[in-house]
Length: 546
Ligand code: TEU
Ligand code: CA
Image: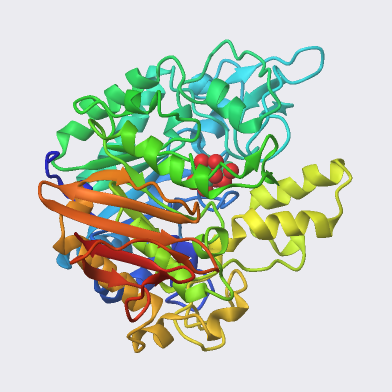
């Protein structure tokens, strides 16, 4: 049994504040809105909330472009609202995980405003500046958000690095003074009582300062080999852990790691000097071709199930896994992995069963507990996401039509996850009394919290049953994970075991019927069909105690 700590036993609920609940009618979600839903959050049976960034930001990339790490985005509320939210969570026995974006800041952060003033400015090398080459960018690195990752600044005639948007200049962690500032801002939030930190793109904070040109057109390969896992990454993480995190009791850190691999993941998770967990993207990027998000390739159930085995093996002896099937950066899990039309309820509850029966800390994204689905942009201009807007700019250069690009954006774009939370069937879904910053999904009259609260067979109430089942059976947290060979590759089955306690989880990813043997005397603990059956029904999920 691995050492028992709260963050291994926690179920984490991710809140995208802009789209969770608006309390003052300006159409934008805010902290008071979250406060008004604390009892709902508690009723889910979760233990912690991960808040996407709530700091002052020009909102070029949904708040992941921070212009002041020490203040709250005015649209979201005040520091008093934050303290009230934190107190409200703690009073209910819930913990708060804040999202810190330390790979880059906003270009409106005072550090960058200073840095770009002159080559001799004291803040100049808080960022990466380089002269161009023959009138071009210093190298051929592509940005996550399209185009080249270097931007020419006329004032000093040099280029600055931005792996993400032009308004998100990368911070130079080689600079000790910058690292000290980062440590200080971390301490500020930990002193305030925050229980954990989600560290955005932490895998990229150590750059190859010779900036070699990438020799591959495969974007995720470029991330792996050029942007992440840099030469001083472990050193920078160790410094954060030993100089900051260890000063605070029981604080959890989870890094976001685009580009991490099973081979290098543990480099981030040294028990004494590393992070506690890291998000990998084995499943999330498996349907991305060389061009990344808007270059989809088919995925198979074999690939999907293999990802869980590979990563469970990685963390089986040391480190600890994190399990997620969706978040603010990806399509809604039921639309992506399930069937959001004919078997919407069954596939949503199946995915919830997977999420809450795996080894590793589960992270559920707001709205997935009620089976919210992808939305459908009618025009690219309706997208609120810079990644989609820039993706369209790049697609046009390749001669793609808007319809072609829209089908790509509606399949995998981030707008899908960012439509406002659907609380009830009123005109704006109970999200706001004003006009929402982003259109709600038109299916809010059918899919919403209110409708599901009173339905004992709803996705919402199944989610609640699953969280209490996971709590009641520590094997589902600490037990071993062992895949079961199945003849039908649409059947994803595995054991969870600890000592004599053995559980069998069967997840049938299909619209057809199938079969799977249920051992004699096995006790069904939960299933997403009301009664047992000898056959496996479409999108059926069961957990049996053997
Ligand atoms: O995302 C970084 C990352 O992992 C990317 O792969 C992400 O999926 C993004 O959409 C590009 O495809 C983090 C945040 O989660 C994301 O919201 C931010 O846009 C990004 O960093 C920059 O801060
Ligand atoms: Ca508001």
